[in-house]
Length: 459
Image 1 (tube, helix red, strand yellow):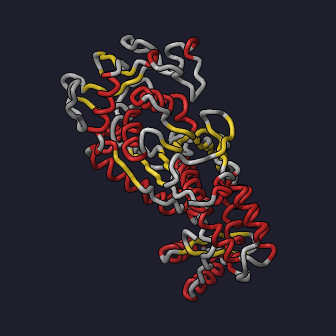
Image 2 (cartoon, helix red, strand yellow):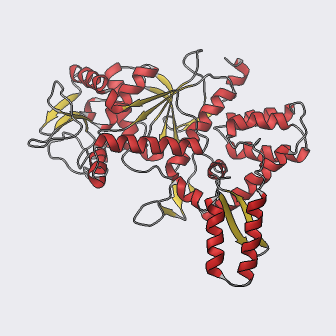
Image 3 (spheres, helix red, strand yellow):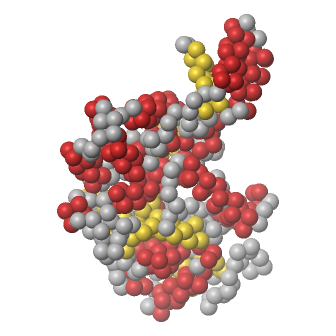
Protein backbone atom coordinates (compact mmCIF):
# COMPACT_ATOMS: atom_id res chain seq x y z
CA UNK A 1 0.00 0.00 0.00
CA UNK A 2 1.15 3.57 -0.58
CA UNK A 3 2.83 5.56 2.13
CA UNK A 4 0.55 7.37 4.58
CA UNK A 5 1.79 10.73 3.26
CA UNK A 6 0.40 9.94 -0.22
CA UNK A 7 -2.87 8.55 1.10
CA UNK A 8 -3.59 11.67 3.16
CA UNK A 9 -3.59 13.74 -0.05
CA UNK A 10 -6.68 12.08 -1.47
CA UNK A 11 -9.96 13.92 -0.85
CA UNK A 12 -13.43 13.43 -2.33
CA UNK A 13 -16.68 15.35 -2.29
CA UNK A 14 -18.94 13.05 -0.30
CA UNK A 15 -22.63 13.33 -1.18
CA UNK A 16 -23.47 11.95 2.28
CA UNK A 17 -21.73 14.78 4.19
CA UNK A 18 -22.05 17.44 1.46
CA UNK A 19 -18.39 18.34 1.89
CA UNK A 20 -14.94 17.31 0.74
CA UNK A 21 -13.58 14.68 3.12
CA UNK A 22 -10.18 13.05 3.49
CA UNK A 23 -10.27 9.54 2.11
CA UNK A 24 -8.86 6.68 4.15
CA UNK A 25 -9.80 3.11 3.28
CA UNK A 26 -11.33 0.85 5.90
CA UNK A 27 -8.78 -1.89 5.28
CA UNK A 28 -5.03 -1.61 4.58
CA UNK A 29 -5.62 -4.32 1.97
CA UNK A 30 -7.15 -1.73 -0.35
CA UNK A 31 -10.09 0.50 -1.25
CA UNK A 32 -13.39 -1.30 -1.92
CA UNK A 33 -15.73 0.26 -4.49
CA UNK A 34 -19.18 -0.53 -5.82
CA UNK A 35 -20.38 0.98 -9.09
CA UNK A 36 -24.04 0.91 -10.06
CA UNK A 37 -23.97 -0.80 -13.45
CA UNK A 38 -26.36 -0.62 -16.42
CA UNK A 39 -29.87 -1.95 -16.82
CA UNK A 40 -29.33 -4.01 -19.96
CA UNK A 41 -32.61 -3.52 -21.82
CA UNK A 42 -31.44 -1.01 -24.44
CA UNK A 43 -28.33 0.49 -26.05
CA UNK A 44 -25.72 2.21 -23.90
CA UNK A 45 -25.39 5.89 -24.87
CA UNK A 46 -22.79 8.63 -24.40
CA UNK A 47 -24.34 9.60 -21.04
CA UNK A 48 -23.41 6.14 -19.78
CA UNK A 49 -19.95 6.58 -21.27
CA UNK A 50 -19.43 9.75 -19.25
CA UNK A 51 -20.51 8.14 -15.98
CA UNK A 52 -18.30 5.08 -16.39
CA UNK A 53 -15.30 7.13 -17.51
CA UNK A 54 -15.62 8.81 -14.10
CA UNK A 55 -15.65 5.39 -12.40
CA UNK A 56 -12.67 4.31 -14.50
CA UNK A 57 -10.67 7.43 -13.62
CA UNK A 58 -11.50 6.89 -9.94
CA UNK A 59 -10.20 3.32 -10.15
CA UNK A 60 -7.09 4.37 -12.07
CA UNK A 61 -6.39 7.19 -9.60
CA UNK A 62 -6.65 4.88 -6.60
CA UNK A 63 -4.27 2.47 -8.33
CA UNK A 64 -1.85 5.27 -9.28
CA UNK A 65 -1.71 6.49 -5.68
CA UNK A 66 -1.24 3.00 -4.29
CA UNK A 67 -4.64 2.24 -2.77
CA UNK A 68 -5.06 -1.21 -4.41
CA UNK A 69 -8.75 -0.83 -5.37
CA UNK A 70 -11.27 -3.64 -5.70
CA UNK A 71 -14.16 -2.65 -7.99
CA UNK A 72 -17.50 -4.47 -8.13
CA UNK A 73 -20.11 -3.59 -10.78
CA UNK A 74 -23.58 -5.04 -11.12
CA UNK A 75 -25.55 -5.81 -14.26
CA UNK A 76 -29.26 -5.19 -13.74
CA UNK A 77 -31.04 -7.83 -15.79
CA UNK A 78 -34.25 -8.02 -13.74
CA UNK A 79 -36.38 -5.93 -11.40
CA UNK A 80 -35.89 -2.38 -12.73
CA UNK A 81 -39.42 -1.14 -13.34
CA UNK A 82 -40.37 1.72 -15.64
CA UNK A 83 -41.57 3.79 -12.66
CA UNK A 84 -39.86 4.78 -9.40
CA UNK A 85 -43.16 4.06 -7.67
CA UNK A 86 -42.67 0.29 -8.12
CA UNK A 87 -45.38 0.22 -10.76
CA UNK A 88 -45.21 -0.29 -14.50
CA UNK A 89 -43.45 -2.96 -16.48
CA UNK A 90 -40.05 -4.49 -15.83
CA UNK A 91 -37.68 -2.77 -18.28
CA UNK A 92 -36.23 -6.12 -19.30
CA UNK A 93 -39.63 -7.58 -20.16
CA UNK A 94 -40.45 -4.39 -22.07
CA UNK A 95 -37.24 -4.69 -24.09
CA UNK A 96 -37.97 -8.32 -24.90
CA UNK A 97 -41.48 -7.51 -26.12
CA UNK A 98 -40.19 -4.59 -28.20
CA UNK A 99 -37.70 -6.77 -30.06
CA UNK A 100 -39.52 -10.09 -30.15
CA UNK A 101 -36.78 -11.86 -28.20
CA UNK A 102 -36.52 -13.60 -24.83
CA UNK A 103 -35.49 -11.57 -21.81
CA UNK A 104 -32.32 -13.65 -21.59
CA UNK A 105 -31.42 -12.83 -25.18
CA UNK A 106 -32.03 -9.14 -24.54
CA UNK A 107 -29.84 -9.22 -21.42
CA UNK A 108 -26.94 -10.91 -23.23
CA UNK A 109 -27.09 -8.67 -26.29
CA UNK A 110 -27.15 -5.38 -24.38
CA UNK A 111 -24.62 -6.55 -21.79
CA UNK A 112 -22.22 -7.40 -24.61
CA UNK A 113 -22.97 -4.07 -26.28
CA UNK A 114 -22.28 -2.21 -23.02
CA UNK A 115 -18.88 -3.80 -22.56
CA UNK A 116 -17.92 -3.35 -26.22
CA UNK A 117 -18.70 0.35 -25.82
CA UNK A 118 -16.74 0.63 -22.59
CA UNK A 119 -13.75 -1.21 -24.07
CA UNK A 120 -13.51 1.24 -26.95
CA UNK A 121 -13.30 4.29 -24.69
CA UNK A 122 -10.57 2.71 -22.57
CA UNK A 123 -12.67 1.76 -19.56
CA UNK A 124 -11.19 -1.16 -17.66
CA UNK A 125 -13.49 -4.01 -16.66
CA UNK A 126 -14.50 -4.17 -13.00
CA UNK A 127 -12.66 -6.76 -10.92
CA UNK A 128 -16.01 -8.42 -10.23
CA UNK A 129 -19.02 -8.13 -12.56
CA UNK A 130 -22.17 -9.60 -11.01
CA UNK A 131 -25.58 -10.14 -12.59
CA UNK A 132 -28.77 -9.67 -10.60
CA UNK A 133 -30.23 -12.94 -11.89
CA UNK A 134 -27.27 -14.85 -10.45
CA UNK A 135 -27.90 -13.51 -6.94
CA UNK A 136 -31.60 -14.08 -6.26
CA UNK A 137 -30.76 -16.28 -3.25
CA UNK A 138 -28.71 -13.50 -1.64
CA UNK A 139 -31.54 -11.02 -2.19
CA UNK A 140 -34.11 -13.32 -0.61
CA UNK A 141 -31.85 -13.79 2.43
CA UNK A 142 -31.47 -10.02 2.82
CA UNK A 143 -35.24 -9.46 2.57
CA UNK A 144 -35.72 -12.20 5.19
CA UNK A 145 -33.34 -10.34 7.55
CA UNK A 146 -35.41 -7.20 7.10
CA UNK A 147 -38.61 -9.15 7.69
CA UNK A 148 -37.22 -10.65 10.91
CA UNK A 149 -36.39 -7.12 12.11
CA UNK A 150 -39.97 -5.93 11.37
CA UNK A 151 -39.02 -3.51 8.58
CA UNK A 152 -41.34 -5.06 5.98
CA UNK A 153 -45.02 -5.47 5.23
CA UNK A 154 -47.06 -7.27 2.59
CA UNK A 155 -49.44 -5.81 0.01
CA UNK A 156 -51.34 -7.41 -2.83
CA UNK A 157 -48.42 -6.85 -5.23
CA UNK A 158 -45.35 -7.45 -3.10
CA UNK A 159 -43.23 -7.11 0.03
CA UNK A 160 -42.43 -3.50 0.92
CA UNK A 161 -39.87 -1.74 3.12
CA UNK A 162 -41.47 0.54 5.74
CA UNK A 163 -39.35 3.70 5.58
CA UNK A 164 -41.02 5.19 8.66
CA UNK A 165 -39.28 2.55 10.78
CA UNK A 166 -35.80 3.54 9.59
CA UNK A 167 -34.33 6.54 11.39
CA UNK A 168 -32.92 9.23 9.10
CA UNK A 169 -34.42 7.80 5.93
CA UNK A 170 -33.54 10.19 3.10
CA UNK A 171 -30.33 11.48 4.72
CA UNK A 172 -28.34 11.08 1.49
CA UNK A 173 -30.75 13.19 -0.57
CA UNK A 174 -31.74 15.49 2.33
CA UNK A 175 -35.39 14.58 1.75
CA UNK A 176 -38.02 16.52 3.67
CA UNK A 177 -40.04 13.45 4.58
CA UNK A 178 -42.61 15.29 6.73
CA UNK A 179 -43.63 17.54 3.86
CA UNK A 180 -43.19 15.06 1.03
CA UNK A 181 -46.57 14.64 -0.59
CA UNK A 182 -47.46 11.32 -2.17
CA UNK A 183 -47.15 11.71 -5.90
CA UNK A 184 -44.44 14.39 -5.65
CA UNK A 185 -41.63 11.87 -5.99
CA UNK A 186 -43.51 8.68 -6.79
CA UNK A 187 -47.00 7.79 -8.00
CA UNK A 188 -49.75 7.08 -5.51
CA UNK A 189 -50.26 3.54 -4.26
CA UNK A 190 -53.20 3.16 -1.84
CA UNK A 191 -51.66 0.08 -0.17
CA UNK A 192 -48.38 1.77 0.74
CA UNK A 193 -48.13 2.99 4.32
CA UNK A 194 -45.80 5.86 3.40
CA UNK A 195 -45.11 7.66 0.10
CA UNK A 196 -41.44 6.66 0.23
CA UNK A 197 -41.92 2.93 0.95
CA UNK A 198 -40.46 0.73 -1.76
CA UNK A 199 -40.74 -2.83 -3.03
CA UNK A 200 -38.26 -5.48 -1.97
CA UNK A 201 -40.04 -8.34 -3.75
CA UNK A 202 -42.78 -8.10 -6.39
CA UNK A 203 -45.34 -10.85 -6.94
CA UNK A 204 -46.03 -12.20 -10.40
CA UNK A 205 -49.56 -10.92 -11.16
CA UNK A 206 -52.22 -13.61 -11.04
CA UNK A 207 -52.80 -15.23 -14.40
CA UNK A 208 -49.54 -13.92 -15.81
CA UNK A 209 -46.42 -15.86 -16.70
CA UNK A 210 -43.19 -13.82 -16.56
CA UNK A 211 -40.02 -14.89 -18.35
CA UNK A 212 -38.02 -14.14 -15.19
CA UNK A 213 -39.61 -15.27 -11.92
CA UNK A 214 -38.50 -17.23 -8.88
CA UNK A 215 -40.02 -18.95 -5.91
CA UNK A 216 -39.64 -17.24 -2.53
CA UNK A 217 -41.02 -17.49 1.04
CA UNK A 218 -43.63 -14.90 -0.01
CA UNK A 219 -44.66 -16.38 -3.34
CA UNK A 220 -43.65 -16.49 -6.98
CA UNK A 221 -42.14 -13.25 -8.18
CA UNK A 222 -38.98 -11.23 -8.73
CA UNK A 223 -36.80 -8.80 -6.74
CA UNK A 224 -37.16 -5.04 -6.60
CA UNK A 225 -34.43 -2.98 -8.23
CA UNK A 226 -32.84 -1.59 -5.06
CA UNK A 227 -32.34 -4.85 -3.18
CA UNK A 228 -29.94 -6.26 -5.78
CA UNK A 229 -27.27 -3.62 -5.18
CA UNK A 230 -27.34 -4.06 -1.41
CA UNK A 231 -27.19 -7.85 -1.62
CA UNK A 232 -24.39 -7.99 -4.18
CA UNK A 233 -22.25 -5.16 -2.83
CA UNK A 234 -22.29 -6.60 0.70
CA UNK A 235 -21.56 -10.10 -0.59
CA UNK A 236 -18.36 -9.04 -2.32
CA UNK A 237 -17.26 -5.98 -0.33
CA UNK A 238 -18.59 -6.51 3.20
CA UNK A 239 -21.42 -4.90 5.16
CA UNK A 240 -19.52 -1.60 5.27
CA UNK A 241 -17.27 -0.55 2.40
CA UNK A 242 -15.42 2.51 1.17
CA UNK A 243 -16.99 4.01 -1.96
CA UNK A 244 -20.27 3.74 -3.84
CA UNK A 245 -20.62 5.47 -7.22
CA UNK A 246 -23.43 6.31 -9.62
CA UNK A 247 -25.14 9.16 -11.43
CA UNK A 248 -26.78 12.06 -9.57
CA UNK A 249 -30.17 10.74 -10.71
CA UNK A 250 -29.66 7.78 -8.32
CA UNK A 251 -29.46 9.96 -5.21
CA UNK A 252 -33.13 10.59 -4.29
CA UNK A 253 -34.51 7.08 -4.82
CA UNK A 254 -32.15 4.22 -5.66
CA UNK A 255 -29.21 5.12 -3.42
CA UNK A 256 -31.45 6.44 -0.67
CA UNK A 257 -33.25 3.09 -0.60
CA UNK A 258 -30.01 1.11 -0.73
CA UNK A 259 -28.84 2.87 2.42
CA UNK A 260 -32.12 2.30 4.24
CA UNK A 261 -32.43 -1.43 3.55
CA UNK A 262 -28.73 -2.17 4.08
CA UNK A 263 -28.37 -0.30 7.37
CA UNK A 264 -31.72 -1.59 8.63
CA UNK A 265 -30.52 -5.15 8.03
CA UNK A 266 -27.02 -4.83 9.48
CA UNK A 267 -27.24 -2.00 12.01
CA UNK A 268 -24.00 -0.69 10.49
CA UNK A 269 -23.04 2.20 8.27
CA UNK A 270 -23.39 0.97 4.69
CA UNK A 271 -20.90 3.13 2.76
CA UNK A 272 -18.42 5.79 3.85
CA UNK A 273 -18.16 7.77 0.61
CA UNK A 274 -20.88 8.39 -1.97
CA UNK A 275 -19.54 9.79 -5.25
CA UNK A 276 -21.90 10.90 -8.01
CA UNK A 277 -21.33 11.92 -11.64
CA UNK A 278 -23.18 14.96 -13.01
CA UNK A 279 -25.73 15.02 -15.83
CA UNK A 280 -24.83 15.06 -19.50
CA UNK A 281 -26.88 17.32 -21.74
CA UNK A 282 -26.79 17.14 -25.53
CA UNK A 283 -26.77 20.54 -27.21
CA UNK A 284 -28.40 22.01 -24.13
CA UNK A 285 -31.20 19.45 -23.84
CA UNK A 286 -31.84 16.23 -21.98
CA UNK A 287 -30.91 13.29 -24.18
CA UNK A 288 -33.87 11.29 -25.49
CA UNK A 289 -34.84 9.30 -28.56
CA UNK A 290 -37.89 11.49 -29.12
CA UNK A 291 -35.67 14.59 -29.32
CA UNK A 292 -33.38 12.96 -31.87
CA UNK A 293 -30.30 13.56 -29.72
CA UNK A 294 -29.82 10.05 -28.36
CA UNK A 295 -26.23 9.32 -29.34
CA UNK A 296 -24.40 6.02 -29.04
CA UNK A 297 -20.66 5.59 -29.41
CA UNK A 298 -21.14 4.26 -32.93
CA UNK A 299 -22.74 7.59 -33.88
CA UNK A 300 -19.47 9.25 -32.82
CA UNK A 301 -17.45 6.74 -34.84
CA UNK A 302 -19.61 7.16 -37.96
CA UNK A 303 -18.50 10.79 -38.05
CA UNK A 304 -14.88 9.68 -38.10
CA UNK A 305 -13.94 10.26 -34.46
CA UNK A 306 -11.63 8.06 -32.43
CA UNK A 307 -13.66 6.84 -29.41
CA UNK A 308 -10.91 8.18 -27.15
CA UNK A 309 -11.73 11.68 -28.42
CA UNK A 310 -15.01 11.35 -26.52
CA UNK A 311 -13.02 10.30 -23.45
CA UNK A 312 -10.77 13.36 -23.85
CA UNK A 313 -13.81 15.63 -24.11
CA UNK A 314 -15.36 14.22 -20.94
CA UNK A 315 -12.06 14.56 -19.06
CA UNK A 316 -12.10 18.31 -19.73
CA UNK A 317 -15.06 18.69 -17.36
CA UNK A 318 -15.10 17.81 -13.67
CA UNK A 319 -17.02 14.62 -13.00
CA UNK A 320 -19.53 16.37 -10.70
CA UNK A 321 -20.35 19.15 -13.16
CA UNK A 322 -23.18 19.15 -15.68
CA UNK A 323 -21.62 18.81 -19.13
CA UNK A 324 -23.07 19.83 -22.47
CA UNK A 325 -22.14 17.68 -25.46
CA UNK A 326 -21.81 19.53 -28.77
CA UNK A 327 -20.30 18.32 -32.03
CA UNK A 328 -18.08 21.40 -32.33
CA UNK A 329 -16.67 20.63 -28.88
CA UNK A 330 -15.95 17.06 -29.99
CA UNK A 331 -14.17 18.41 -33.08
CA UNK A 332 -12.01 20.63 -30.85
CA UNK A 333 -11.27 17.65 -28.59
CA UNK A 334 -10.20 15.62 -31.63
CA UNK A 335 -7.74 18.30 -32.67
CA UNK A 336 -6.42 18.65 -29.12
CA UNK A 337 -5.93 14.92 -28.57
CA UNK A 338 -4.15 14.57 -31.92
CA UNK A 339 -1.76 17.40 -31.05
CA UNK A 340 -1.16 16.08 -27.54
CA UNK A 341 -0.30 12.61 -28.83
CA UNK A 342 2.01 14.04 -31.49
CA UNK A 343 3.85 16.21 -28.98
CA UNK A 344 4.21 13.41 -26.46
CA UNK A 345 5.72 11.17 -29.14
CA UNK A 346 8.23 13.90 -30.04
CA UNK A 347 9.35 14.45 -26.45
CA UNK A 348 12.77 13.43 -25.24
CA UNK A 349 12.95 10.62 -22.71
CA UNK A 350 14.06 12.04 -19.39
CA UNK A 351 13.75 11.69 -15.68
CA UNK A 352 10.53 12.59 -13.89
CA UNK A 353 9.99 16.26 -13.19
CA UNK A 354 9.39 16.10 -9.44
CA UNK A 355 7.54 19.43 -9.31
CA UNK A 356 5.06 18.44 -12.00
CA UNK A 357 4.67 14.92 -10.62
CA UNK A 358 3.65 16.39 -7.27
CA UNK A 359 1.22 18.83 -8.95
CA UNK A 360 -0.34 15.94 -10.87
CA UNK A 361 -0.88 13.95 -7.67
CA UNK A 362 -2.36 17.04 -6.00
CA UNK A 363 -4.84 17.44 -8.87
CA UNK A 364 -5.89 13.80 -8.59
CA UNK A 365 -6.16 14.09 -4.84
CA UNK A 366 -8.34 17.18 -5.04
CA UNK A 367 -11.62 15.36 -5.75
CA UNK A 368 -10.34 13.97 -9.06
CA UNK A 369 -9.55 17.31 -10.69
CA UNK A 370 -8.82 15.73 -14.06
CA UNK A 371 -9.25 19.00 -16.02
CA UNK A 372 -6.32 20.37 -14.00
CA UNK A 373 -4.37 17.14 -14.57
CA UNK A 374 -4.89 17.54 -18.34
CA UNK A 375 -3.74 21.17 -18.17
CA UNK A 376 -0.56 19.98 -16.44
CA UNK A 377 0.06 17.49 -19.25
CA UNK A 378 -0.07 20.36 -21.75
CA UNK A 379 2.38 22.34 -19.61
CA UNK A 380 4.80 19.43 -19.53
CA UNK A 381 4.81 18.90 -23.32
CA UNK A 382 5.90 22.52 -23.72
CA UNK A 383 9.06 21.76 -21.75
CA UNK A 384 10.10 19.25 -24.42
CA UNK A 385 10.99 16.63 -21.82
CA UNK A 386 9.58 14.07 -19.38
CA UNK A 387 8.03 11.71 -21.94
CA UNK A 388 8.09 8.72 -19.59
CA UNK A 389 6.41 10.73 -16.85
CA UNK A 390 3.57 11.67 -19.20
CA UNK A 391 3.15 8.08 -20.30
CA UNK A 392 2.91 7.23 -16.60
CA UNK A 393 0.20 9.85 -16.16
CA UNK A 394 -1.64 8.24 -19.05
CA UNK A 395 -2.26 5.25 -16.78
CA UNK A 396 -4.81 7.58 -15.16
CA UNK A 397 -5.95 9.56 -18.20
CA UNK A 398 -6.32 6.51 -20.45
CA UNK A 399 -5.81 8.48 -23.69
CA UNK A 400 -3.25 6.21 -25.34
CA UNK A 401 -0.75 9.07 -25.52
CA UNK A 402 1.99 6.78 -26.78
CA UNK A 403 -0.01 5.83 -29.88
CA UNK A 404 1.84 6.73 -33.12
CA UNK A 405 -0.10 8.39 -35.91
CA UNK A 406 -1.13 5.91 -38.63
CA UNK A 407 0.71 6.34 -41.93
CA UNK A 408 -1.75 6.59 -44.83
CA UNK A 409 -1.00 3.90 -47.47
CA UNK A 410 -0.03 5.05 -50.96
CA UNK A 411 -3.09 3.46 -52.65
CA UNK A 412 -5.40 5.48 -50.38
CA UNK A 413 -3.54 8.70 -51.14
CA UNK A 414 -3.90 7.99 -54.87
CA UNK A 415 -7.68 7.57 -54.48
CA UNK A 416 -7.87 10.82 -52.48
CA UNK A 417 -6.08 12.71 -55.28
CA UNK A 418 -8.33 11.14 -57.92
CA UNK A 419 -11.40 12.18 -55.94
CA UNK A 420 -10.15 15.77 -55.58
CA UNK A 421 -9.72 15.95 -59.38
CA UNK A 422 -13.22 14.52 -59.93
CA UNK A 423 -14.68 17.05 -57.47
CA UNK A 424 -13.02 19.94 -59.32
CA UNK A 425 -14.76 18.65 -62.45
CA UNK A 426 -18.03 18.60 -60.43
CA UNK A 427 -18.64 14.93 -61.10
CA UNK A 428 -20.34 14.45 -57.76
CA UNK A 429 -21.68 10.91 -58.29
CA UNK A 430 -18.22 9.61 -59.21
CA UNK A 431 -16.72 11.49 -56.25
CA UNK A 432 -19.18 9.79 -53.91
CA UNK A 433 -18.29 6.38 -55.31
CA UNK A 434 -14.59 7.06 -54.74
CA UNK A 435 -15.31 8.18 -51.18
CA UNK A 436 -17.15 4.91 -50.58
CA UNK A 437 -14.12 2.98 -51.92
CA UNK A 438 -11.87 4.80 -49.45
CA UNK A 439 -14.24 4.31 -46.52
CA UNK A 440 -14.58 0.59 -47.35
CA UNK A 441 -10.83 0.32 -46.77
CA UNK A 442 -11.19 1.79 -43.27
CA UNK A 443 -10.38 5.47 -43.85
CA UNK A 444 -12.39 8.65 -43.29
CA UNK A 445 -12.40 11.78 -45.48
CA UNK A 446 -13.15 15.31 -44.36
CA UNK A 447 -13.44 18.07 -46.96
CA UNK A 448 -12.18 21.43 -45.68
CA UNK A 449 -11.58 24.85 -47.26
CA UNK A 450 -7.86 24.02 -47.51
CA UNK A 451 -8.32 20.56 -49.04
CA UNK A 452 -9.34 17.01 -48.14
CA UNK A 453 -8.07 15.46 -44.89
CA UNK A 454 -7.82 11.66 -44.69
CA UNK A 455 -7.32 9.59 -41.57
CA UNK A 456 -7.75 6.07 -40.30
CA UNK A 457 -11.31 5.44 -39.09
CA UNK A 458 -11.64 5.48 -35.27
CA UNK A 459 -8.31 7.24 -34.83
